[in-house]
Length: 487
Image (tube, rainbow, N blue to C red; front, side, top):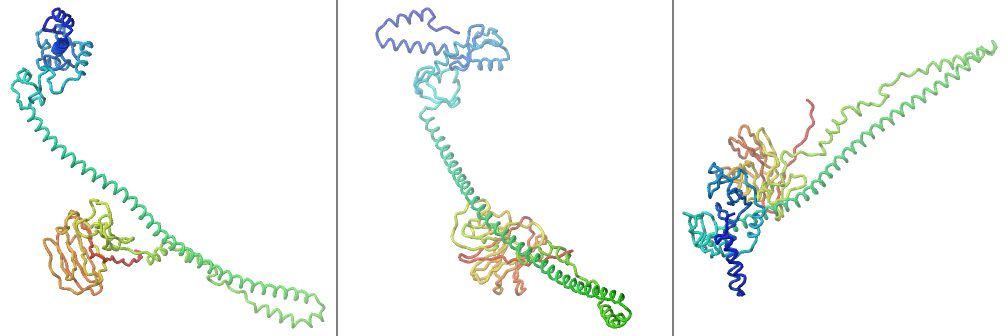
C-alpha cells in the first residue's frame, strides 16, 4: 500500500507531537489531517473512490479488485496501472485493508461536503450524475465533463421526479380502480352463482315433477290394465271351474248308473242321457286374444314418448339474452327472454357491458347460416331491435356497426351511415330473419305477413342480436313451438 504523503516516520512524529497539545483546536485539526491522509491512502487510483475488495499487487500498489481486472481486460496486459510492473496473475484480497475501507465508508459524513476533498458540493456532474466540489471539477476523473450549479440540477431533478410521481400516482389510481372492479366482480360472481344455482334447481324441480307425473301416469295405466285383464282371466277361470265340477259330477253319476241293475238302469236311462247331452252343450272356450298385458305399449319408445310429451312442458327461444352485456338500467327475466328498463343497478363495469346506450345483446353471435326470432313489442312508445357487429365499441354509441329498426313515434331503419324513415302500420310483433351467408337481414310482421324492411350487406364478422326499450317498458322474445320428428 502506498505510504502517507508526509512519510511514515514524520507522520508518526507529528501525531505524537500534536497529541501533546492540550488545545481542542489542535486536536480537531489533527483528526481532520489524519482522516484526510487515511482517505487518500484508501482511494483506488483507477475509480478514485474508497477501495472495494482491495487487492495488493506484488509492487505494493493497491486497487479495487473489479477495477484492476477491468483495466487488464482493456489493456490486454496484466501490469500495474501505476508502475507498469508485472504483478501476480490473481492477486489476493487484503482482508485488513478491506475492513479498514469498510469502516471508513460506514462513518457518517456531512452530505453537503465532498467525501474526497471535504469541500462544499456546489456543482453537479451531468456525465457522472453526481454532486461534486470545485476540486473534483478540475480533477482527472471529470476531465471534459459538463457541470451545472447544484441548485439548478436539484430543480431539474425535482421536476422530473414530480412528473414521475404524477405518473406513479395515476398508475396507483388506475390499479386501485382495477382492484375495485375485481372486488366488485368477485361479489357479483357469488351473487350470479347463487341466483343461477337457484334457478337451475327450480328448472330441474319442474322437470323432475314432470317426469314423476309421467311415471305415475304410466304405472297407473299399467296397473289398470293388469287389474282389468286379471279380472277377465279370473272370471274365465271361475266359469271353467263350474263346468268342470258339473261334468265331473255327471261322470260320477253315469258311472254309478252303469253299475245298477237292469231295471233301475233302464228307468234312469233317459235322465242320464239328458244330463250327458246338457254337459255336451258346455263348449270348451277358445283362448281369447289380448289376454296378456300389452308390454310393448308401455315400454316401446318410452323415453321418446316422454320427450314428445315434454315439449308441452318446455319452451325454446332462438335468442337468449346475455345479462353480462345489459346496460345497468336493464333487468332481465329469470329465463333470459324478457328485458325491462328500470332503475339503475350496481353492476360490474366488465368489458362486455354496454354503458352508453340502453341495450342488451344476445348470448350467441352468428357467423353463418339462417336464423329467425320473434319479439313482442306491443304498443310500447319506444324500442329498437337489430344486430350489432362484434367489433363495435361497447362503451361507445354502438351506431357505426349495427343494423336495425327503431320506433319512437315513427319507424326508422338504422344502419351505417345514418337512418331512413319507414312507412308501415303498427305491428305488435316483429320477426327478425338473418341470412348471414347471403347478406340479408329482414324485418316483418309475423301476424299479417307484411314485409317491413330488408338490409343487404356483405357481413364479414360475428353478429349479435340487440334490444332496447323505453324506461318503464319491456320487450319479450317469443318462444318457438317444439316438434318431435323421426327421420
